[in-house]
Amino acid sequence: MMLIYETGGLPTTGQLAGWHANHAPSNFGIIPYAASLSPTFVRDARKYVQYIYVQSDNLPNPWDSVPTFFGDLLAALE
Image 1: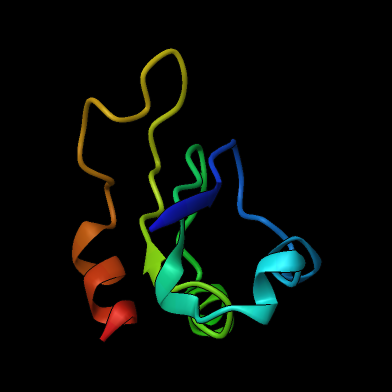
Image 2: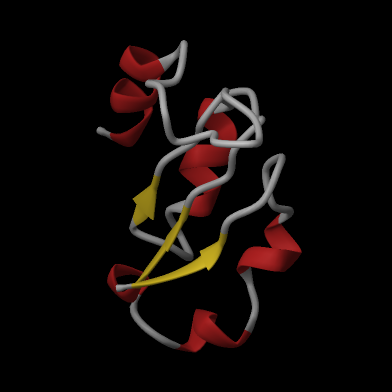
């Protein structure tokens, strides 16, 4: 599995439809931070990537906490 996006904010659909769109989504994931959860974004992103972890925390270490909307993220991924 390769992460194709790790930066602040949600990527655009255009960013998700890059070279990797010619391969199975199960090969790719994204981990945006400093972002709000959008169930619509999660639904649309799953066309391109299988693994999605949206984080509400920000730099210097956005990975030191659980997103405030973790339960909603899990529900959106079902």
